[in-house]
Image (cartoon, rainbow, N blue to C red; front, side, top):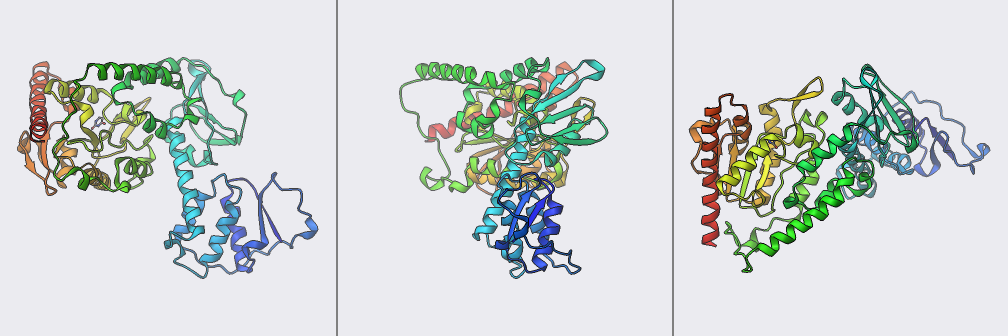
Length: 481
Ligand code: URA
C-alpha cells in the first residue's frame, strides 16, 4: 500500500507530483491511500507501507482540461477526492478522450465536484459581509464566512481586486485570508467567536436591503435558491428577511382581496400555450443557474455575481438594458438602483406593470473601475457584448416575448446583433427574425445624466411616450386573446 500524505487540503502541486510518480510506476489506484498531514488515520502501520517512490524522470501527457478540472475539484470537501482524481488520471493515460464521456461515473463525479466548488466560490463572493473594527486610520474590515469547500485561496483574489484600498480579513473555520493593501497572507482557521458581530455599517446595509426589497416581486423559493438559508445567519440583512416576507404576504393578501373576481384571460402568444412551453432545460430558472457560472468574458472576475434577467417565464414583453450597475451587482437583480427607479416611474406613468414584463440586460456582469471606495460604471465593449449575447438569445428563446424593448445603444446592439443608432430606429415597431417586434428607446440612465432640467423633463416624456407603445401592444394582445 502506498500512503500519500499531502501538505494541506488544497495541495494540488503535492497531489500532482505524487499522482505522476504513482502512475509512471504503474501503481493502481486501489493500492494508494491519500490523506492530508495532520489527518492521518491511526490504523496505518508504517511497516505496511511501500517505500516512497523515486520521482520519475519520464512524464506523460494528459489533456490541459483535466489539469484545470482537477485544480478546482481538489478543493471539494469530499475526503475521497484525491483518490477519485487519481483514478481518473490513471484511466486517462490509456483513454485520452475519456473527459468527453460525460456519463462515465468518474468524469461525472469530478465535474460535479468542480461545479460545486465554483458555486461555493460565487456564494462567497456574494455573501461575505465585512464589519468594521478599529477606528479611522486603523480601521480594518473583518468578515466571517463558512464555506462548504476549501475555497478561501481560490476566492481571495476577487476580494483583493474588489477591496484593494481596505485592510481586511476573512475568517473561516478552515483558513483565514488577510489583506493589508500590499499582500495577502493566509493563517489557520478560527472559531466564529473570533469574528466581530456588530458594526456601524450594518445599519446602512440593512436600510439598503429593505429599500431594494420589492414585496410584489417576492419569490421565496427563488430567493432561497440564490441566498440559501444556511448563509442567512452571517448576513446583517438576514434579520429583515422574515418580517419582510410576512409583510409581503400581507400586502399580497390585500391585493388579492381588492382584485376583480373574474378569471383573467390568457395573453395572446405566437403559438398555443402548450406548444410554446420551453423545454425544462431552457426555463429561465435553469438558464439563471447556468449563467451563475458564466466565464465567457473577463467581467466575471471583478463582479460580485451574474445578474440574470427577472420576470414571468411567459412574459409578453422583454425589456433589455445595458448591464447591471453597482446596486444591481450587490443585489443580484436587474434595475434596482437609480436607473431602475427611473424606469419604474416611467413604466408606471406609461401604464405598464413591471411585474408583467421580463427585465434583463445585454451584459450580465457589472463592468467598472474602482475609484477609491466607489466603483465607476464602464460601458461594455463589443467583445463583451458578443460574449454575453448567448444569454440574451437563450432568454429570448425561453420567454418568446411578442415585443422586445432595447433601452440604449448596448441593448440595441445585442437585440439586432449589430451596432444600431438609437435615433434612427427609435419609437417604431421593427420586425425581428423570430417573429417578435422590437422597439428601440433610450436608456433610463441617459435621463439621469442630462444636466439641464428642461431637457431632462422633455426627454423623460419622450421615454414615457415610447413606453406607452408597450402599453398599447400589451392591451391589444389582451383584447385579441
Ligand atoms: N443599468 C442597466 O442597464 N441595467 C441595470 O440593471 C441597471 C442599470
